[in-house]
Amino acid sequence: MVLIDTPALYYRAFYSVPDSIVNDEGQPVNAVRGVLDAIAQMIRRFDSPRVVATMDADWRPAFRTAIMPEYKAARVKDAEAGTEIPPELDAQLPIMTDVLRAAGIPIAEVDGTEADDVIATMAAQSQTPVVIVSPDRDLLALIDAASDVSVLRPRKGGEWEAISQADLPEAYGVPDGTRYRELAAMRGDPSDGLPGAPGIGEKTAATLLANFGSLESIIKAAKAGVKTGGLSPKRAATLIEEEETLHKTIEVMRCLTDVAHGLDLESVPGECDRTAVEAAAHGQNIRRSVDNLIAALGDAGRGNDQSGTTQPAPCLPARQPQGQGPGPHQDPQPPQSLLRSLAPRRVRDRSRPRPGHSRDSSASTSRRPASTRRLHAS
Image (tube, rainbow, N blue to C red; front, side):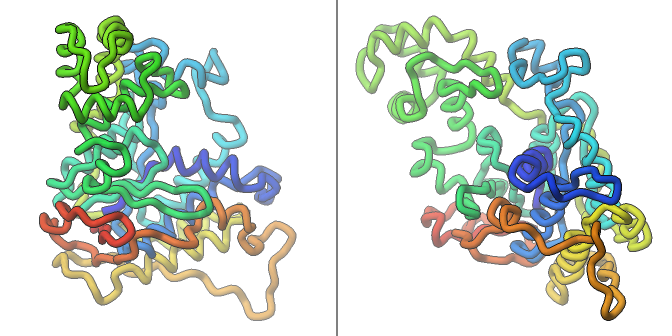
């Protein structure tokens, strides 16, 4: 199953795709097109229509700001509304969600939580391998070999980086997602208002975790006056001073795994309603992106379903009358900036599993490098 961190994708598209792409009312639809094209790419990449688009019902939840009031405080653009989202982007979200729902791709959001919490809950509940699609480093804490949860991150130059637990030691110097969260707490993240431990960066945090095993053990050693394993007197003093903040940071970063998202994961995807798709896309200048998504859904896993479940009938793209070219507000060819920002030219991990495969513990514990490891989602 593929879990999409939708807010991360629509922000990425909004800031990388030209806002000159507008609908019949002159409203930008660059983020809509970027998200639809990115999801179509994921469906084709994994040859599976089992995709869920998760959303932020609350991008700055009260339970997190109660622990750390500064959490994401610097991002607030409208103090009265308490929002970070630009109005030009906010207006595009209903268009995007209407198309996805009509195409049978469920939108999952839970009041008072972020998309991260929905993703973590679904990853914990899934009976098949899970790939989380997101540029957000915090979600690396959810990587788990035992439950076959991995992350696919967009990188510079249009590439995608597949990260499983086997890659964490080489990439970040930590053995698993739990230790990655502790590393991230020490490193900090100014964009989220997480201060970290001053003077302790990612490499130093990784060294300390490698030598002492956990944040708790590092702080215990610092209090005991240990001066080895990268724990200098200055670092020890910093960690002791920031102990409470570090523990709070870990709690803020920890994703909920029991939110009531209301979806039956075994029924994903839902039925595609072509009439509703057409209604949602009408006048929006997203024809090519919509047809691309629908075609990807129709092709995914065709003749390869081994799950024992009945897949929804494909919702084929509408045919344009012969000889009819695009009008002034009909969808032109995708801009090169969109292709560069969302379409991978080369992907490190090239396997395409079939939907419905059970978890493969031997594959999930492989220590092969990312360039050769097989990443799959059902």
